[in-house]
Image 1 (cartoon, helix red, strand yellow):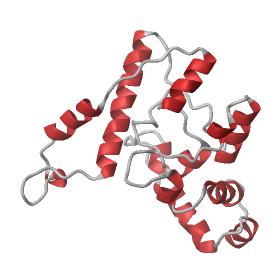
Image 2 (image 1 turned 90 degrees about the vertical axis):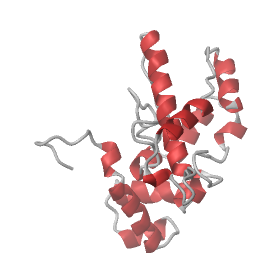
Image 3 (image 1 turned 45 degrees about the horizontal axis):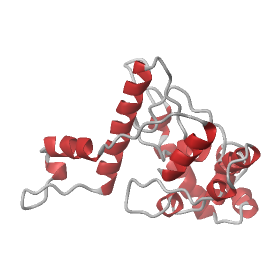
Amino acid sequence: MSDAEQVARDLGISYDIFEIDSIVEEILDTYNGSDGSGDNGEKRWEGRYVGNTSARVRMTLNYLVANHGDKLVVGTSNRAKLATGYVTKFGDGGVDCDPLGDLYKQQVRQVAAHLGVEEELVQKTPTGGMVDYGTDEEEFGVDYDTLDAVLALHVDGGVPAGATAHIADTTEEDVEYIVEMHEASEHKRTPPMTPDRRF
């Protein structure tokens, strides 16, 4: 958050800070379903429930602010995140436009460096902060360089899995794993189904 504030100050962008913990807790406390209950009746929420709820609360506030100011909500997801479903549906994935959405993580770093963003921020280890993992890469199970390479070569480029693994200096198992993430998250990249439009 302090990095975001610094960037906003450097660029002369006005910003607000909203405390959402109490809102998230209220939502979780409101739901009494069995999925969130422990044996003793006390609520036991896993990190992903809290993280996804937090992302959706932020989305709601983003749109409240945008509607009030007749503005658009701009997303920050890159191609690596979108292609693997590392976004919350109707959370950080709920935006009006996503200018970084076609750029792989390395390309985002290159653009940031070109625009004069401080090197410390450009190379900072990405953390989603939504689950118990310390970094995005720990949650993915592969590093961003490998993720970018497999997506660019195999998923987007059609290079065979074996050749992709060789070029990306990884294993075919990792290539298959990334393909599985891509396929399993297709629902996050398509509009809601209707009777005439199915996945």
